[in-house]
Image (cartoon, rainbow, N blue to C red; front, side, top):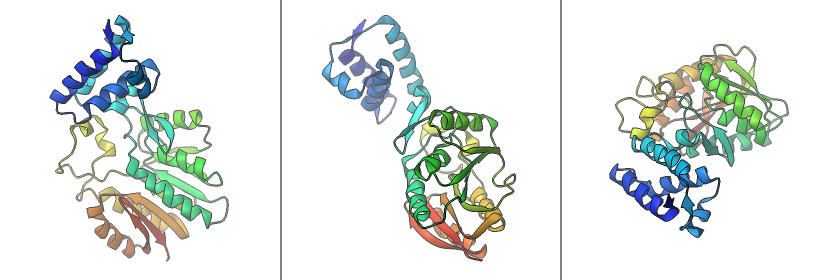
Length: 272
């Protein structure tokens, strides 16, 4: 048996030695989750004694974290736009920068007619498409992914969050045969040569890496969208800011013009 304060001290030290910069936070998050409490509880009850069974589970989680397995995979969920989404190592972990896609979408949705169709391409956990449906209920939302395992996770998240969406297995827009008003996508945009966190080694390569300095799949999506999107429709994509200028220039050749550029996100409007 061991008190909360002692376990946190020892676990934080181990994580720090493994060059994990968020060592104390990670230890607290793991412990709070296992105790089904918030982190404030840990600070208020430092002398609380952990059972041997709890310690066995907790120490196993720390051993996995020492291997740089992301916290989200250890806990099985990640918060996105104020909601918890189940994640597995078949899905990319939702990033806070992707929330800007939802903010831009909500601004667009305010000024458009009802019953428009939105497709979330490469949905992964479903965080973008499901959030889009919950924040803009008038939208008819389709989520697509090439991975059956990812789509299974997205389906579970939709059920848990009571989001009515359509799920389609598709490589980009290949199997989407209806007219689309809006496309949103956080596609792979990392080049394998880039310096990156060791945690990303545990995420699906299919969801991270792309050729052409990370821009190949985004360019392919823009090309496909130009043949399937309605006039005055939108495509909202995430990419590294250094890729934006090239992607905007490419999109212009496909009859898209820049609508909004903010942080990692580009919103393009189709104007053919």
